[in-house]
Amino acid sequence: MTEDRTVEDLLRALTPQVLGLLVRRHGQFDRCEDAVQEALLAAATQWPGSGVPDNPRAWLLTVATRRLTDEWRSDSARRTREVAVALREPAYATVAPAADSEPAVADSDDTLTLLFLCCHPALAGSAQVALTLRAVGGLNTAQIARAHLVPEATMSQRIRRAKQRIEAAGARFTMPAPGERDERQRTVLRVLYLIFNEGYTASSGPDLHRAELTGEAIRLARILHGLLPDDGEVAGLLALMLLTDAHRAARLGPDGDLVPLAEQDRTRWDATAIAEGVTLITEALTWSPPGPYQLQAAIAAVHAEAPTAAETDWRQIVALYRLLARIAPNPMVTLNQSVAVAMAEGPRAGLALLTQLDADERTAGHHRLAAVRGHLLEMAGEPGAARDAYLAAARGTTSLPEQRYLELKAARIAPPR
Image (tube, rainbow, N blue to C red; front, top):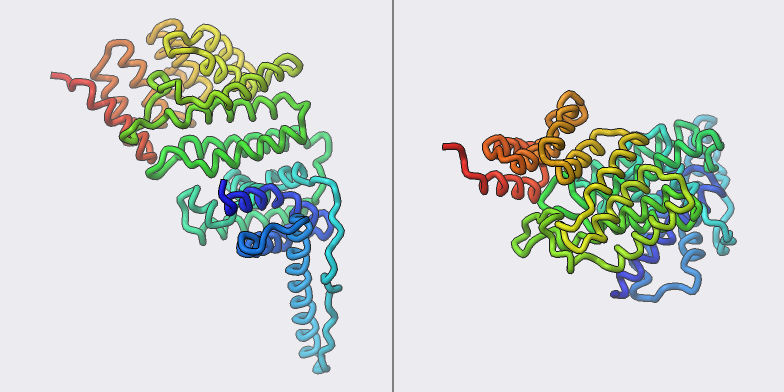
């Protein structure tokens, strides 16, 4: 690992700790977050040359506090001038106390409170993701914009509006009340999973995978698991991410084309990540009632433990999907379940399950529905219909690797004579 990489990793780990301390001490989430970003920039510029200070968190807190103090001084002087002009009297500015001495650094870690704040219900999902990546993940606006393939100015406005909305909603830097906490925690898990999924299969653009997003999602899930070690769903989410990301090296062929799970070289899977993920989910299921993330992780573990695609225990996977569909029904669960049913009971059974998604506005016309239908039709011996479905799916995706893969699947099926 290079020294620059070490500094970057350290700064990301310290970001939520420093921001949490400032917000708990001063409120004003918007200003505190801006001050922390300036402190991070200063550290990223100075530390590689001068070395990491003995107490890097205190260093960041001191710099960020001074930025806040400078802003408060400027605001106070401006208000005094405005009053003086209005009263036609000389201006005597009052200023905030100086921050020349290093502020005391508390031992508490406010990362969990900060995650809950970034996932405030007043924010739209896209804003929750962006704010979490910046305030908790320590990514700067340019990095978040690149990951989402939008201009930096657009992302900057999105983050600014999110912070303003939090302020307008009167959100306080405290853990939610018990009645609200479970719902907000579900939102936190969903946001982390959204970050992971966008990195694992990018929704648009030339790249299939964005390592900065999957890596950040796993890092944040580890932090959350450390803060909530007795929560089975948090353990399940971390296990699911690890087991899924373990396939990453095998997902692209030498020519850059997407390789489906059944055709991947399993020797290229990350055995360490698989072992950790299997251990996490196995242990969690022994003491926690199964939740959606745990069941998805259990399904991923069955895939990971199969020596070959042909040896996959599809009946066990079908049973897990049926349980998942009962406790957390949604179209994507049905979509994935149809593939498992097709493998265990035949393609016609899988196609029958797909028909219920045609009337669901969340999936009707979605490229993934067309892609799965093409796969099952090809299994069922209907090449013409399969080819049409693959081409429809290719037209519907904005991911170039997925588009190439689907077009290639269609091209390999002989057109009807």
